[in-house]
Structures are given as structure tokens and as C-alpha cells.
Length: 409
Image (cartoon, rainbow, N blue to C red; front, top):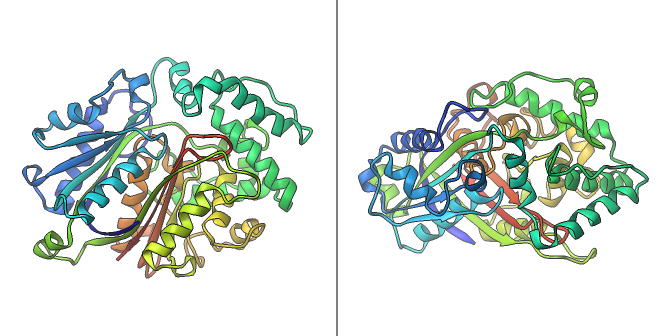
């Protein structure tokens, strides 16, 4: 939907393996940074939307994670709405906060995403992703995925949920079908990972900052063909936050560093027919219409590259190129910093990391930083309009939740 909200401040932690940190401490760090950035006190907050996805399993904090985290830093009494929407949890919290500000319900709202996926028992972490499908039909879901892979003549074991995330098999199936339809190669996927490793090396908040070549990506341990380890986003711990304000409040505070939310659209997936557009294409088109912005007007994009093939496919879904031309876009350097449409200058999920409940707001953090011209070595020149795409879960044959937002300097 069309929005009229402004981002006054953002904050995030470094993403990574924080075994010595609590969920609360990560959330507090991100929120304090966002409040400081906005020059707003915690007493001025009128509501908070808090996204998290897996911590009920990995940490054991259920039902009131937002209240527990915010209370620890002295934020109480205000409405706190907990949001769980798979990998799109933080983006959903952001979209809901924007919507409440746009409709005049509140003037100052906090949006938070937080997650701790690392724990001593790896099976707990894997079970988070196993539960992000229609669990009552889990066996049927997995068999359909494996059948799609086997139809391509590729052997696959049934280790998802025990030795790897089920979603890597889902992305592998999508990748194989893209390869068969458009001639995409495994090296094309490696080009995405190599590009994002360079971007991540410039981001102090990134989980991994080493630069990798395409050959190094291809030589990494195979996870689920055609995916190697370097083509898969890592799990992580971390938090990100944003302070949203109304136009009236933005004028009172001063607009110099504000970033406007022109549109933010949330939709759920469905069991589409082969001929139908998927949820990403539908939401993208709705977001472009609501924002009045076309794909050609975008200066920078942060998208959900939970695997490197996903980034290529989202180039096409978002209208950055025609179907089948995504490989050319990355191989020509157009999506690298300095190219015509830089994608994931943060390093993306592949390198920045993917603490699922925080990812959507980390994308917002990166876009705000870019649109303010404060991204340092990874700055996209003259960035004025940015798009964030964050999807999550799996339903039927599509993402279960999708949020796409357009931000303007």
C-alpha cells in the first residue's frame, strides 16, 4: 500500500555467532542505536512492533518476546505487538508500523527485528526452518520438492531438517528448474556469491567479510546440488530497529536526514498454478503502482538472497531484467557497486548474515544508510530511491509471506 511515514532513525548489531549474548541484549543494542540516531527518547515512543521467528524454539521465549526485551531497557505501558511471519517477520513489523503511522494512529512508532538461531543443539535450529512450511503436510511437501529435483536426474537424500535446512533443498529445486528453462549455470550462481562477498567485505556489520572468487565458491562443500556452502546464507544472531514517524512529527524534528517510505506492501503466498505470477511478482507490481516508482528508477536494492540462485530469480521477479536475463545482469557487473543497479551492497543474506527475525529491518538499515550517503566504502553513488524485498516461509509452491518496500531520500 501507499505509505506516508518517515524513517527518523535506524540501528543494528553486527550479525554473527553470539553465543555469549542474550536475545534481550541484542535487541537493546539495536533499539538504543535507532533511538540515538533519531534523537528521540524512549519516553516518546507510542507503540512498538517486534518481529522474531525462531527464538521460541532456540531460546524458549514464547508469547511476549517484545515486551520482555523492551521492558529490560525501560520501555513499557505502550502497545507492544509481537510479529511472527517467518523470514519476513521484521519486514512485516516494519510494514505494520508504517501503516499505523500513515493512517494517523501514532506519530512515533518503533519497529524491531531480533533473533538468536545459534544454540548448542543444532537440531533445534534446523527445526525452525522445518516448521516454516505447512507442518501437517510436511512429508507431502518434502516429497514434492525431492520429486522436482529427481525429475532433473539428480540424486538427493532426505537429510533436510537433520543435516541441513529444508529451505536449501527448496532453493536447489528452484535453481535446477531455472537452469533447465534458461540455461543458467552453477557458475552464474557462484558469480552472485562472489559479488556479495566483495560487498560484505566493506560492511562492518556483516557476518562474513572475506572476499571469495567464483572458483572458491564452486569448490566449497556441496549442500544440495547445485548449491555449495558459499551459495547458502548462514544462520546468525542479531537485531535491527527503525523509528518511524508521521509527516507532522518529521517536520517538527527536521527532515534533513529523514528517509520517506513511499510504499510497503505485505501479502501472503498461495498454491499458484504454473501459469500464474508468484507472490513476489504480484507484490512487486503492487508496490511499484503504490509508490509511483518503476524498476528503472531504482538506484539500489536489498533483496532476500537466502541462496545465490534466489538473487538471480528475484532480479526477474522485481523487473530488474527480463525473464532469463538475470545471469547476464550479474556477469556484466550491473548489480555490483558501480553498476547500473547495485543489489545487496550490504553483502546480502549470503554475507551480512540471516538471523531470520531481524533480516527485514537490516535491509531497511542498509537502504537508509545508502540513501543518506553514509555507507562509506560501499556507498552507491547518488542513491535516491531504494527497494527492499523480504520473503519467508513456503506454502504450496511459493513463499508464504512477502514484503516489498520502496524508500526515498
